[in-house]
Image: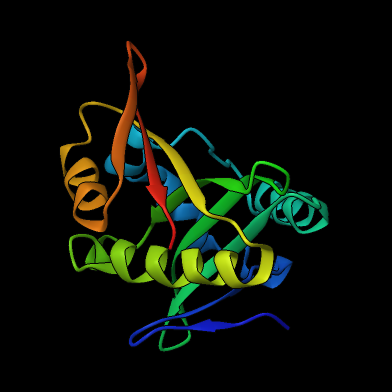
Length: 160
């Protein structure tokens, strides 16, 4: 089974067993509600979502685990194997881990995995203009803004 390890985290594909009440509680958090498009109202919805993403050929959906505790997710979807680019979304669901460099560590490791495994050379993402902390974190990682709309900013990272 796929597993990516960083200094502090293990990333692995989510399973239906990961669709816990703890995971579901993340969607009740005000910060999560403010900045995430995908929501779930039940563990059954979470299980269905996890299964759907596991079956998608152009998706890499990983849980972020710190000492076996699920603290967030990172998803690349769609992965365009022809254009060699992937669109990323990340959720640090556990509030105790926000602002502690999780995104940087996890994005760097998964971007390198995508580069080695699928020759992906560009990571794309969208972020709301009000999400200043995320924008700052993405810029520190090397993401640059390539488009700005009323909906938010679109950023790109060239993976070398």
